[in-house]
Each structure stands twice: as C-alpha cells, then as structure tokens.
Length: 479
Image 1 (cartoon, rainbow, N blue to C red):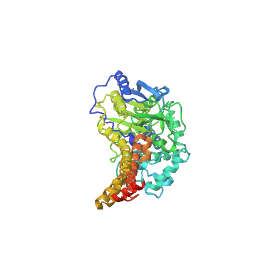
Image 2: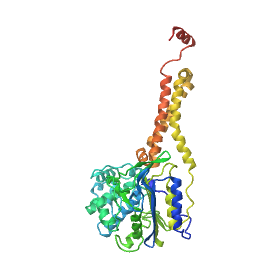
Image 3: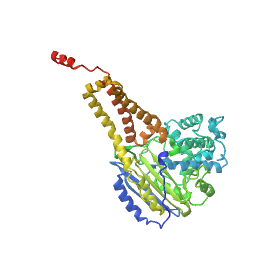
C-alpha cells in the first residue's frame, strides 16, 4: 500500500557488519521506548537464518507471547509474492509480461486500460493512480476481486500507460485477477499451492476475512497509544497486501530469492524481478523496490494495525525481516526506527535514525485541540448574543465579519473532504482505516468549524437588537 513506501535510505554506504548480538540489545531498548505491542524479526546470511527473535505479546494487555513463528499480516510485501506467481505463469508459457492485458482479461477488451501490459502493472507504470488503488477495501464475497477489477477496467487509468511511475494497489488487484483467470485457480489457493507450501512456509497463508486466532492482532494508532483491531483482509485486497506470514517463513522466502537456483522460479527469473523493470521504473522491479547504488532490494508493508519490512542485499546473500503488530501514527507511535534499525544492523548498513517529527507532533496536537476551541467559541457566541446581533446593523464591515468565518471554514471542510484525498492519494475512509485518530481529528475540525460559523449566523439573525428604551421598558414589565 502507498503507506508502506517508506524510503529505506539504506545508508550512505556499506561498512563492517554489526555483530548480531547488538540487534537483540537494540530491540530491547527500542521496544521499551516505542511501546509497540510486539515485534518479530529474522536475519539471513548465506541462505541460513542466523538470528530470529521476538518481543512482546500478540495483543496488547493480553494474548500469548510473540515468537518468530507467529503469523503477521505482511501488507505490501505480498506484492512480491503476486509478482512471483505471475513470473511462474510467464515461465510456464501461460502469459507474456510484455503482452497487453486485454489478451488475458476479457473485461479490458476494447477499453483504454486494455493496452496496459503486465510489465507496467508489475512495475507501477500502468497509469493507475495511488488514489484509485486506495479506494476499495472490498468485501468477503467470492466474486469481490472480479467485480473490483471489472470496475477498474471500466474506469481506466488516470494517466497514459507507460508515461510515469506511480505506486498503486490497483495494479496488483488486476494481477491477482489475472492469476485466477489464467491458472483457473482461486488466488489464495494458487499462492498456497505453488509458492507457500513448496517453500515450506508452514506458518503462512492468504487472509480470507476469517479471523485466525493463531496470528498477531493488529493495533492502530489512537492518540499516543494503540487500539487492537483483528485483521479482516479479504479477497479484493489479498493480491496487494493479504499474505499472512511469520518472520521465520519470510526469512526462508528471502533465502530462496537470493539462492541463485532454479526452484519455485528460475534463477534468471528471480534476478529479473530484482532489477529495474523499465526506464520509467528505475527504482522498482517486479514486486520489489530497488536501490541500484547500494545493491539493496526491499519492500515495506503497512496494513491497518501492522508495519512490516523485508530487505535484501542479493549480491551478499544477506537479508532481514521485521514484523510489528502496530501501525505508525501521525508522528506519534512511529515504528520506522524499530524496523529500520534492525534491518540496517542486520545488513551492515549505515542508518542515522529517524527524525523527532516535532513539527508533525505539534500539528497533530494543534488540530486535535481545534474542535475543542470551536466548541468553546460556540459557548462564547451564546453568551455574547447581543453583541453578535449588533453586527447585522453595523454596515457592510459588520456583515462581512459575520459571514467571513463561514466562508473560511467551508473552504477548509471542502479541502479536507475533497482536495486532501487527491493530494494525499487516499480517501478519508482509508485514512481512518489506517490512522483512526488522525482521521477523526480531520473530520472533527471540518465539521466543528462549519458548525461554529453557522451558529454565529444563527445567533446574529435570530432576532434584532433592542433599543435602550425598549430594554428599559421590558425590564419594568418583568419580561
């Protein structure tokens, strides 16, 4: 998902490998500092898991302990599995990655989206936008993925295919449906039969919407802490972020990707996945982000309640996996330092740590206090009714002072509800799914501001201003 594209910035260069023991020490310190419910991690060198560890519990305030075999929702790390499945079909002669989509999916025939190639879908150069990919969270029905992909076919890409790189979950939703149509198998069944089981990933599966008690519970940010939320990833989102896996299982997966052998995919095919896909996609291959200067290959994952990271140095056959059952908030509760710290130590790369995000924290607190300020302003307006009503008779400037707050608060509300999703690439509904506290704050700011402005106008025009003689007469009559 777009929220998973945190830049690895895998250092300013390679240096001597950090001793493995220091990873455990770092995790102890960082878990205490961040307060995350749980984390699992694994390190791979020369095809072997050299370190696997875990801290915390599967659910905050209860639940069993997290272990390296505890399944987590991996988020967009799933995209590499979907890409691997497409490459399997390509090596079997079932698809051509440079063929147009309309050859395989009838819904795309005679439509602008039909000219998109599989390579463009795999590398996020199809023209589908971030916002388009974040619009649907699906439902549990068996045909949910097919119906969502049919909608994308009718809607078409936001820009011309092949013209630009833009990360979009829509690409991998379409690829998931391609796998089903070409193979004749359900996406989850295909992945489990052709990838997860052959790799010995026994603690891994594709989320189907049914709560699995064996896996870690996700925790979403809630005003400086986290609140538990059990995973409900379902068919329509499965190809983009629905694989559930343990740290040990993902370590096995990374080891296979770096082993240079023909197994679930040819060595040549695996190498192709970890190279830039095209001139328009210099930093993304097939389901993997790439830093050609450092030689690193990686993908992060952000799901509601989970943050994950998998990274490799294929030339050195080194890799690391970090799974956290907490989603990062707006400056508060950020898990990036934990994930990046483990990976940088495992791969022997420089990492200066995360910034303090003081500006973001101040902004969040200010926005959270703003609705309270508007409510206090409503109470103040009620107490100052006569003065506010007097503005209706104070000429043009007085009337302007009454109406101007409505114009500004309406503009802010329109920006929050319409323009912000386009700028950020996600709707308010999506934001509330990932960061419910920040989503609630934005909605409260938009609605309370307009409510305050309307209340002032209601007070101003609910009655005239009495003359002094009228008020004296009224008081004498006891009114």
